[in-house]
Length: 239
Picture (cartoon, rainbow, N blue to C red):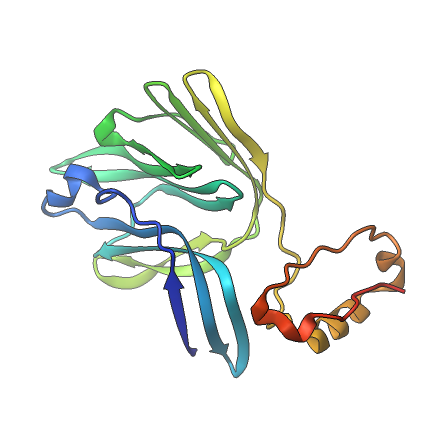
């Protein structure tokens, strides 16, 4: 894997997502969010196959420490007006355990912080659903279809644990402020990821779709920018 990606129009948080816990010693895992939403351009080569990015959306976070939480739920999602990040985990500290919550809803340019240090509580964690409440804020995330992959995670500094996460899945999100629902939506599944938007790549892909499936398509939408001039004047159709 190699490549170069450039980020711009970053959306950093007002302050560290860990809040006062960033100063606590001996925590097994510390989380960081560098940007909730930004534009990505560049390319990455994976097993000699190139993937191009041209003003695509990106999210940037990271973890540091020696162990992943024993139990946790994590989710992140882009939507038209913003971005969501939520993590709920079992936190060991000084011989006790508690449910720690860190989350951010970036909505129409405003940051809503949901966290244990602000009094956030998990009202439900079951059946692939997590609900958190904090004063007048309520955030719900539900996994509707599991498409995760196995990854390695640290235990006492060694990558010996296997966890399951997904970069794309079918989920439901709902955010309520003072009794008013700001958003309530389901994500859509990604069917395929193409290496580029070049006309030859698109043409070959569309013609690989069976004819009976193509006949059920009513509309195709494509974003055209100055960086994609090679597609201008070309008609994408089904036949």
